[in-house]
Length: 482
Ligand SMILES: [Cu+2]
Image 1 (cartoon, rainbow, N blue to C red):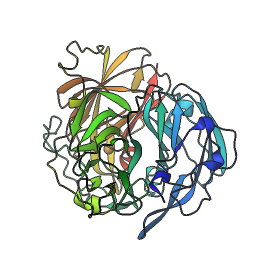
Image 2: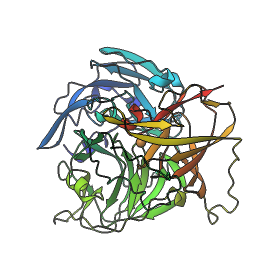
Image 3: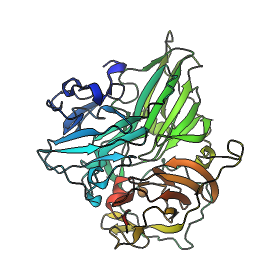
């Protein structure tokens, strides 16, 4: 498969898209291609095969015959009709992560979105907004079935065009980080955390010493649908400027990645431009997060773009970046990891001397706890002392500005996501910032994160950890509007 035809480089535009011409790349069989339809976007959920490399040809569930599904390019504010066809034997939900849309089309059972029943189809109309890098994925529960929900190939980018993209790039790429063939493990390698060494503001004085439950692990990785060394390289020329949209589409782990020999300028997080861009050796993405980077191609050679953890990279999480005219073996360079710190990207006194954000009118306190082995074979997660569901505990008044204080009293870093709303990050472990807008925030190991948001999207709103197993075993909450 040529690079330019990989599913995430092929950009479909609903305005001029013939559904039959959508790329069926990625799978060995084109059986999942959608039938003719007058919907703007057709997503067909069906079994697919994904050839990561010759040794790993997987069977999973995907969209339109591939995994990842097609990159959908939608126009901000222009309504689209989406037809979801479910060719599988289980009910499904397509969630539009990061979009400000009503619960009925958000693809979330807890919010009351309708299921797409097995072997049936359903139409949704939604108005994509705000502009930026969003994504779509299954929001089905998986519980102890590692062939459902976020463990499948049901994910893809949605890029919402705002019409004011300067576009001074030689190449624009969509790269999704993934793990495959998940399995249960009693001893999770803690290679995804990156928040150890932080102040442990929320560490309890007495720790629960019960043996932990089984966790979900993986040793098979890819970027898009190819393992490192398989598939075509990203071909570049000296002097080019790349725009790369990264997505951590894992339902299992947070990840740090780098491009050997190059720095990456972070310009947007979760699709929203950052107030203070930073140029870094590596970037960290919690499950569900997106980061947009610019890269100056100023170091000719053949390089690896991939996971900074060697076992992860060598098990597939990477892609080769090849300058024209170069012929050596792909190189990796280990670099010291700077601590990942969201507050660096917020407004600072230099960039915005008069920076001020609206003061919140109410504060919501949330305490996250883990009961080792509290869900039979698995761990149980609590929000304010209870697993989901809570009884009318988080009630919002429309129009008010809220402060959400997330206190993580567990030994994992959790990527917390709130549907249908935008968060402004205000502090991480008491280091304050403002102006950084996100929909998913990694709350550090035994740490504390504070975000503000305006209750301006009436209807039920799901809040949860984006690690599928944590969400399935208690780690979610529902916000209601009064
Ligand atoms: Cu979690």
